Length: 247
Image 1: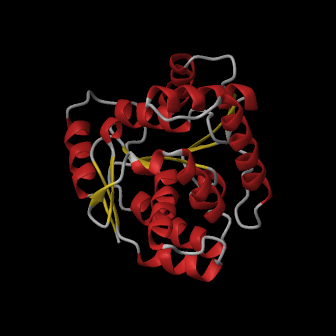
Image 2 (image 1 turned 90 degrees about the horizontal axis):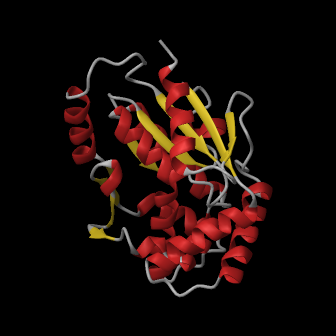
C-alpha cells in the first residue's frame, strides 16, 4: 500500500501561493541516470521550485530491500522478492526537502540510505516481478498527482512515463559520482572508504545496464546533461530554464 496524502496537500497549498507560471502545471518530469549523478538533489529542487510532487523511486526499491533483509527473505529468489514487493506497506510523506519514508508505519528515511541497503536494492531491482510491482505503483502516484510530479530513477522516461512532458538524463564520470557519494556518506557519519564506494558504483552500473527488465538506457527524447564538471546550481538553472521555456 502506498500513500502520499500529506505530501500532496502540502504541494497543492504551496502551488496556490506561487505566482502565475508559464508552463503546464500538470506536467510529469522524468529524471534518469546512474547512481551519484545528482538525480535526487535536482529532483527535489525542481519539485520545490515548481510546486510539484516529488517521487524518489529509488526510495521504493530501498524500502523493499530493507524489508526483505529484516524478514530474512532470500533476495536472490525472484518469487519471494515479488511477494515482498506486493505485500509491503510504504508511505511517503512530507515536502521534497523533508521527504519521510515509512515502512509499515516506521520512519526508515535514514535506515534505507546505508550502502548495504543500497546494494541490496540494486540487486532486487533486477527482478522483473519487483520492477513491475513498483512501476505500477509509481504510475498510479504520478497519474493521481493533480498538480503534476517530478520522478527520478533509472527507467522513468523509458518505462514508467515514456510520454513525460520533460525527460532529463543526468550522468557523470564514475570517479566524480563515487566521490560525491563518498562525501555524502562521510558527512552522515557512515564508515566507508572511497575505494569501496568506487567499487560499489561500478557494480551498480553494471547491474543497471545489463539487467533483463528495464535496463538503464537514455530515452531518445531526453536532454542529456553531464554533471562531472558542473555544480548543482548550474545544472538546476539549465533544467529549470528548459521546463519554463514551454508556454
